Image 1 (cartoon, rainbow, N blue to C red):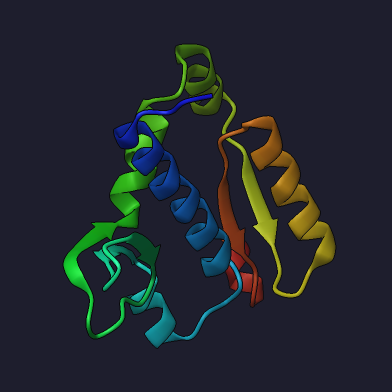
Image 2 (spheres, rainbow, N blue to C red):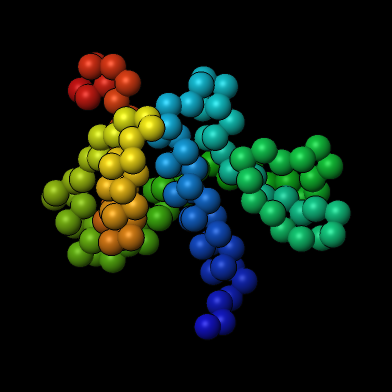
Length: 128
């Protein structure tokens, strides 16, 4: 299947946003939270496009992408029925760090295309 360059770029960014959101669920430190709010796109010395959360010092054509905005854009591109179901019956996944069943549940929701919000429980107050 041939995919246009702009579509393949969007898919790469969406996948990185999903990966970043799952990484944020692992109770990162405060400095990690600041770093992981953004995804970076850059060109390396071989003129290849790369994506990551920390660009190298010699990165060219550096572009910073706000992951919170990507999430909103991804939601707006979902089919009407999915958006309506998500608005009417929102899915909240409560997880804990180092929790294999939580990872399985997250993978299931992603695989089925179910929009969900995730909250990591560290203390009793986090569930509110």
